[in-house]
Length: 199
Image 1 (cartoon, rainbow, N blue to C red):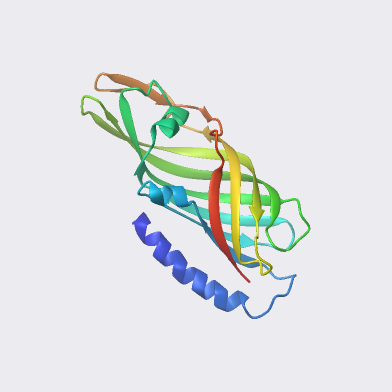
Image 2: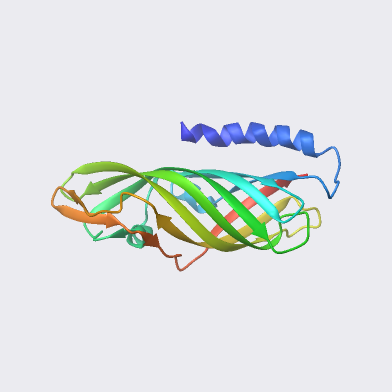
């Protein structure tokens, strides 16, 4: 189901381009689509769509995941994790950003907050398997850079703290005991994304 989202969002972006390309009025809103390329390298997907207002705010929807967490990410999210592997099955969420620049384009420094729902499959070394879902919220700081004169293609990065809102109790799986952390700190490297703004 979620792997069809990139195709769906492609068609939405084409439609949005047709709507927004009627003029570069700075008082009009615009639309952008972004992706985290690392998730595709890991065998998953990442796609986010943003509605960009001309006055500091952007509002987005996100769908991503569908890959096995690398060890560093597993260690970041889970305690007592030495004898488990974790597949991040899906994530769906909404986000809001506030940018500090006065530009109608979503460039520069921003703060963001989000809320969403995600699913996991955990496998212990003795072959036991468990699936669970949880709600999360996050808050973070990021930056968007448009390297070319025409503000379409852009690059960005952000750091976020994630708050797991439920299902954080200790869990028993085969001979393993583990739990997902209540607060997940930012990783040593920021989350990188690439995107395209339709104007």
